[in-house]
Length: 582
Image (cartoon, rainbow, N blue to C red; front, side, top):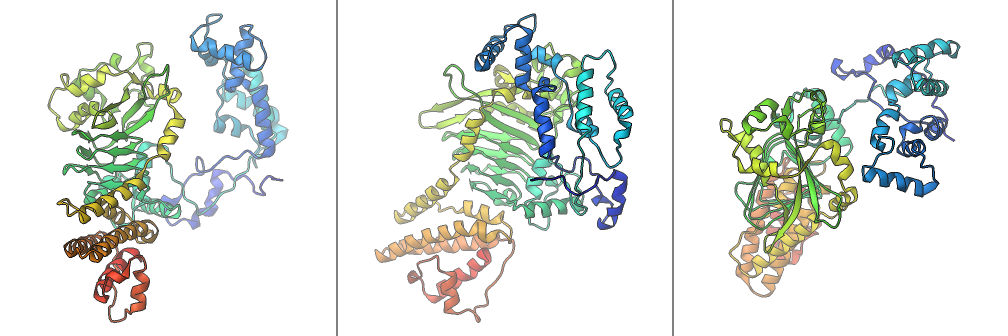
């Protein structure tokens, strides 16, 4: 039932008609790479059919079939593919070629933009000039009569030139490119910001108009600084400018900190007795640490760290790959200019590493890039009695030393020796070895909610048993301080209400048991908590006590057992809660 949209193809030169809609020159953007390519039913049918016959050399199943036919292993169905897979897994070759080597020569390299879309009809194309258009199409691809793939290129142009290419433009739309690590990190930080000023460390070289578009887009999709996260033990002065999604971070060390502009996602770092220091503009993903012992983890500013589970083999214990790069490191640039966010040659000189320590010798100098550099270590999940289970990240110490000890030779660094002793993979190898289902399970099972309940239960026990331990609500302050006035109610309210109900329950029980010293400590704790919350809130709305009445107080105090409080106490609670909940 879907038909081609009733719109015509516009050449880029015709975008002048839309210039009046833009506020300034910075808002004018080229149309290329700013949209989504959709194959409508007829075009999709052509694409599927070509993948079975003429372009089967561009699919994995088609290559397996061609490899089998070439080597006279023509069988039927699954049994045939099992034999090909068996040959590949044992690196056996027939006729001197493995399946991978065969694919290098047999595959027709086709690009969506320059090959498929350029063959389609546009508003300025005429089928009357088919021969001349085909000739120019083949010349651009250096295809002549002697080319082995000439018939395939001719067929591709012949079939796709029958299809019409339409564009549907949104003149007032904006475009964000999130194709690099730093672009993603900056968007998650600035796009979720609600403060008048964002630290310069998070802005990079973006203009104020670009920053405003990022904020507008982030707000339209509901981007927030905190989601499904429990953070305790980190100062809110800088962590409020960071973004944490689906993560648990716990540390009781005074040296722990989260730098401005950093993004943490899908990480579980429960290290109450360890120091966790995360620098500025870092991107952490999938970090696993559940460690009760004493340790120090220092992640330098501008570093991207991602941990992914590897597929198990032969019943071996669980292992992970830890990708470590600079946020601004170009993955496919040749020659390599930076590594771990630092000058490449400087790192080699200070560490004593050579290119043979990083690349396989079969890779020529002209092809050596971070994409195929074996610098990402395989780490094993370990556990010790009383200390919990964790993945040892102490190898990062030598990278931290690169940043902090500028004039010191690191050849004898214990962290560097540890890193060199580990088996390492390149990014190009990681894709085939990662266990995606295990990573998905990890992301679904991060227990941030349980940590909230556990901490509130712990506070109740401290108060009721008169323990001389702090009743710390920093996990509440972290959420409130990182929330905007727009999403304060939906994000912060449940946690604030839950915390107030916990304290109210303890106070009510203490008064009922005539343990007035406990009740007094509860009220003092509640007073401090509300006072700190008031300081954490970006926008404060005060209550005019003269206009307040008991009905309003009862309405705003509905979450609390109001039998425990007199009118003046309720007014105090409402005056503060209006600041954090409205």
